[in-house]
Image 1 (cartoon, rainbow, N blue to C red):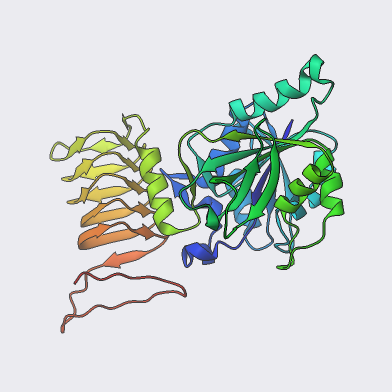
Image 2: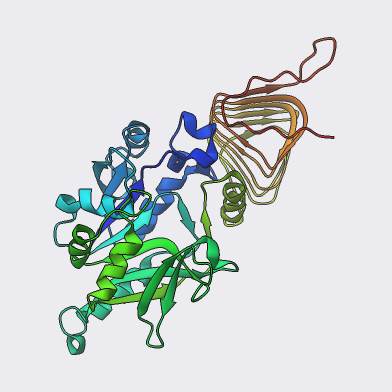
Length: 366
């Protein structure tokens, strides 16, 4: 079985961060989002992985992932010149996929559940002698129960567990089961992708391809997600995901902590980091070669490598690499990009001085 991870897309909902970086490389607990998907596939026994990238951000992703060996995978890079849909990704990956079964996974998704059971159920069903060589099953989708399915692709499921219909953002949903963004296919999906037409928005929709399989009499099964699922394409879900992952970290203090500092709870401080006269209250991760001086870093914060935090307070925030924060009373619920400089001005008259990129958002205290 092979893996296909979709890591194109402009990440417009995370601008201005994604003006200069791929959304799949934004860190959760100081690890790029994309790496969690690769590791989940490797954990499920899938080490031959194709990654779909765009011309705009593909170079950064290739640099971050490399050949995949450090993550236990062999990576094949596949360029999607234009965002023409998820099924189009399958189309351009045809040569890489061959006739193998494969998992398709959205690179900006984060799941609490691993992929092991999802994959094993598909492969064991298809290998059952009493069900024939394929067991009749050509696809399997992962679904999650949601409060308001009108905002999602929704599956209608029969009593025997087979999927009978997929509806995109329905006014009257047939169920509360939303498509999560993890799919299993055999080679039959290539016939489906070749048969469908672009949707009104000009894209080849994977839901249309799966519906084609159903209409042609093939079995499409489903699993129900266990645990949380977040699309990290917006700031608040990304911070929530950071919080959930930080709740699972183990304490590890590899950096330098002076005697005037206090470190409490689940805290990971990477090698080369320095904590001076500061309080770190976990769960928190602090990256390599970051220096924290005369500061307080509160729960659910991730500070990446090579940052400077001086005379500042922050919590429930994600700070990307090479940024500096100084003389700020409190930063909370914030996502701060790389190479950012936040400081309190000593200019007179007092005032707020800003230099912000396109699509920035600033909330000032009242």
